[in-house]
Image (cartoon, rainbow, N blue to C red):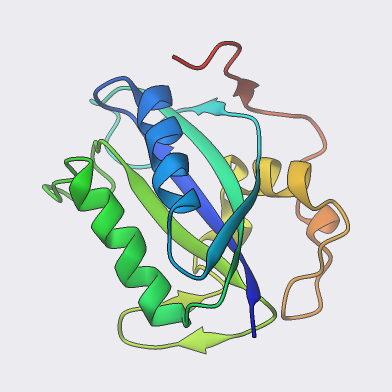
Length: 161
């Protein structure tokens, strides 16, 4: 049985838009999975330390037969393949892939929390997610549309590199 997984993508090092395109290529090649769609790319300020470049963010939808932890392992392998090094919390990175939603499941595991713990507080997740699924209702019953900021605070990246 397959599930819809929403994946948050972000990068701010080494040609960030190119990093996202490369990650989408890897997502499309995952076993038992099919990449269905990706949002526009959005530019955003860093959440953490401000002494780093701005980010490029997007959300992708994946139909997958993988279990949540197997998908998490695959996402982390893609990050490593693209040079991800964890130096400081919310610091700069070549690629960050977050499992935002996995069907209507709620998971609170040592390695994985779904829905993603920061989903409701991050415009750089909410806007691309809303672009893909404006009618989406979160596992807690809250409509996504109720969370989306009224004015788009993020700029779409006009021409991904």
